[in-house]
Length: 272
Length: 307
Image (tube, rainbow over all chains, first blue to last red; front, side, top):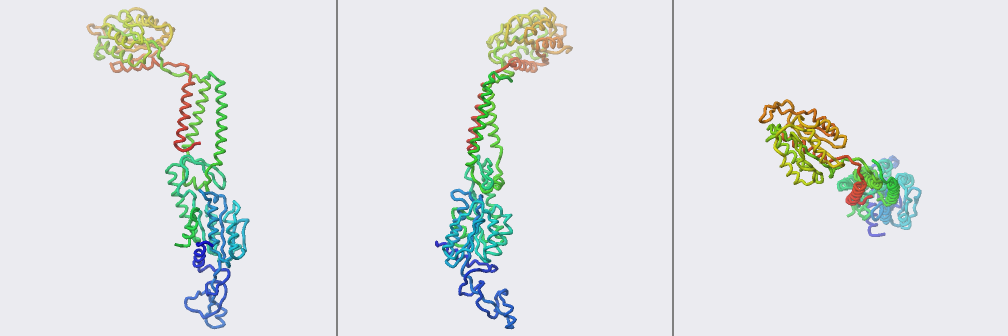
């Protein structure tokens, strides 16, 4: 585990949302997990959903179920393997996504479970521990893996409360809305937007041939200064729109720059 | 348009087809080297790229190649080209009516000034002769391309006096003409033929021999202008001048003042030095096509590597 792993793990534990219940091995501390610890009299501030009504009826006073805190994680990652992710300047967005996924699995400790979800190449239930994390980090998705299918698989296979990392360029965001919302409700979802490799400006000027990574359609364009400026503005506007949409469904978000994947986690989790 | 070298044209067409094939091959290879982009639709929407530079350059390449191909075919076509070996004889009326002052300072002086403007406007190489006529016709200057000699001859034109022998003037002008080449007589008069040969018959004869006759009428019929020193009216037989011009395949131009007379002569100077000829367009086509291709190539590099 590198130095960033523990920080990320701590952030994942601390950042757990109240409406997402955890899964895994409990810690001996009382907390917000699934494992039952004891019953006690209701105290002001207790979550009303923790009231055990059967015990309350028997005791004649409100009784609260005290749970043990979850101290282990289920870490899962979906890296968009569609052709559009296999573009980039020096590193493709897909490779940057895999690097980010490795950092994600670096947060795992021996008791954690790890899974890598990909269309046609999923790995779950994972073996516990660092070996599983390393295995998940080493997985390469076949080209053509699309996040929609992988999210369906994640919803079907991952336990509630799993920490799910989703990395994509979100060009088909409008088709992913329902799946993203469902994942955000069920899991602790972190969605990283793979940055446009040419967000700082197209590398060529004048006559440029662009090939669509998905359809292989080639267009010859004349890119002047005005077009470059329009492009930068459009990329910035798209990033803003995608991040807003992801936040709206309840995901933690950031832009994944191929040159600095660590920065994406830092931005998403507010790590200084 | 005709082609002197049809085989050359055929070879050029084959070369053009090879060029298109080569271009398409390069295009196919270049497509593989295109910059991969995640979502082309987004890029097109974001860039809103101008399509015209590529279309313009492709069109210019195609035009350049087509013009070069035509040049190899040896194109010949009819065109109006300036002539440098024509012969023009100016027949200037010096009858007594030319003393009239309705054209400042006199018709005679206005005619000389217009003739000088004509001489200055005609390009070098055109031979010019001067014939003056009144009761008879005199060749003041045989056709020559010496401009100074022409200006001196204009200064030697005698002062206005006597009758009007238009037919004789045409005949004398024709005598000084070469037997071939572009031959033109410019007749300037303000009167009615009243001496010598019948100008209509002479003009018909000249027209049949390929001599063009342009006529310029000074003043107007029934204007009431008197010949200075006489009680005779200075009448103009415009219909006869029109007939003479038609016989000589030329035009009749009326000039009512000095400015219009000068303009008429300038116009004649321009028209008489242009002729329709079957010309060889190989060199201009080759130069034009080559220049277009070079300009397109440089333009393409200036705008960005293309194709």
